[in-house]
Amino acid sequence: MKAMRMTLSAAQSQSWFRAPSILPGFGLTMGVTIFWLGFIVLIPLGALLFKSASLGWTEFWEIAFSSRTLGALKLSFGTAFAAAMVNAVMGLLLAFVLVRYQFIGKRIIDAAIDLPFALPTAVAGIALATLYGPNGWIGSLLAPLGIKVAYTPLGITIALIFIGLPFVVRTVQPVLEEVEVELEEAAATLGANRFQTITKVILPTVLPALLTGFALALARGVGEYGSVIFIAGNIPYVSEIAPLLIVIRLEEFDVPAATVVAATMLMISFSILLLINLIQTISRRRFGRG
Amino acid sequence: MDNPTHYDGHPGAKLRRGSLQESRLVTGLLIGTALIFLALLLFLPLIIVFTEALREGWGRFFEAWGEADAIAAMKLTVLVAAISVPLNMVFGVCAAWAIAKFEFKGKSLLTTLIDLPFSVSPVISGLIYILLFGAQGLLGPWLHRHGIEIIFAVPGIVLATIFVTFPFVARELIPLMQEQGTEEEEAAISLGAGGWQSFWLVTLPNIKWGLLYGVLLCNARAMGEFGAVSVVSGHIRGLTNTLPLHVEILYNEYNFMAAFAIASLLALLALVTLGLKTALEWRHGAELAANKTH
Picture 1 (cartoon, rainbow over the protein chains, first blue to last red):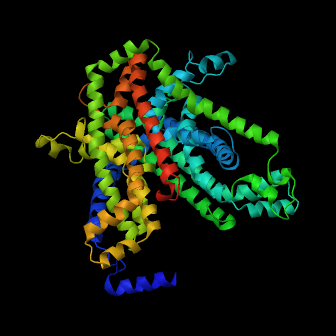
Picture 2 (cartoon, helix red, strand yellow):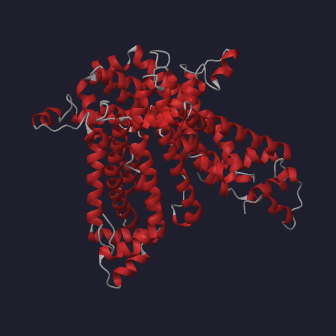
Picture 3 (cartoon, rainbow over the protein chains, first blue to last red):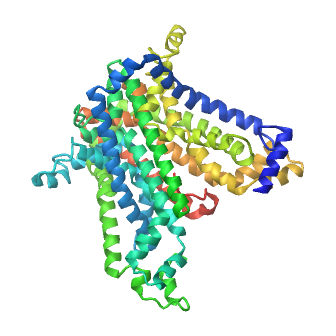
């Protein structure tokens, strides 16, 4: 820390911006980075801001609070939240099983967790729609029980569980691997039973990571399009997600409406991410790493 | 360390199995639940892609692939990946060099901004380019006057693909190069090597597996991207249709067999990517970034 402050103060005498280094290439690589970031990410996202700002408040709110937009947003955030909850529970269980137990085929199972990252979303979409459709392998089993999956919010939730699973497993797994067994031994010698050790020693340690995984799965779920539209059936007010509403507005050449839905979606997503970040900082202060 | 049986032999720790490990019944239940959940959620969709693709036999399968539109879609997908992946690779190496090897103000902000595309919906990733380059967009009229087509044409598809795959390489390389530090490059420079020489001979050999890992994931996403590309492509068959978009068109035309035939190749690409990625993790785990998260 002290050394860093010294380099920083040394840097200030030379350049207010960066610490001195004998390595070359800072100007070139920084220039390429800033140019590419600006050209690909910042200017286009700025266009979204500019376009929404140029609409004016009344028009913005009128579209944002129309019942169809509200319905789509509620559905997107609701299903993404439900899916992220399921993923938090199942992802924690999977991470625990993969870290703590030995069983046949474990390495393959571990590798397969990333399948949703690698599989193109459209492929996942048509596979899930076929599987859970009324004539599909799972859909036909559930139909006699009166459970309809395809073309309902339940179907959307299942697609989002598929998409979000790796986020939770991959954030919790490395933290769980590092949980100090000494702590568990200490708890056990002090008379805690296994259930108490898990809920009072292991769980608090992985909680910040679990929250990160939950937030990542939620953010991905809210914006997800490809894997959802096939199983959703896309009925307005029932199973029409917000990203699809953007596409529909664009197909109607109603660019302002598409922009408003997109801007509202981004605002809500970023607020949620910020809120979760805040909760995380607090829980990290209380329980340690994440 | 993480082998639970280790504690049984631990001196002084004569605790019953129940206090340091779950009972056999609970262990079995947990593993069973995990396996059934994964079978239903991950493996069944994968199996159905291949069974549906081959439902009407290999003949029909190859027929679906022999169609001119399918071949055009395949060519476009390869072209888009061949442009966007190298560009993001160069960007990723530059960003990682600047961020990992130097100390400067605003570094964490820069890192956050690089990650930004991951938290933007694919559909919005396409929309922003329409707002910029589309007919009603900020630069639309100017582009139209000069006869430059970006939206509903290949450049738009490439831009949207670059956006969604933007962070992959940088994200893999930054933590890896931070971990490796600057000593080796500093030694090379002080021994008289030039900047490029020390990059090619010192840095690149150190990061090659991490770079390959990032490029692999970047390519898988570039070839499989659907939402962002769908918004900017205009779905012109044979011209602006990538493979994932072609899958959608066939599916919506109730040509399920052909849709799954095309999809099965994309699924195969995903499996190959997963296989290579896993092999890299097993063989060169130490030379990849410390974190396994994406």
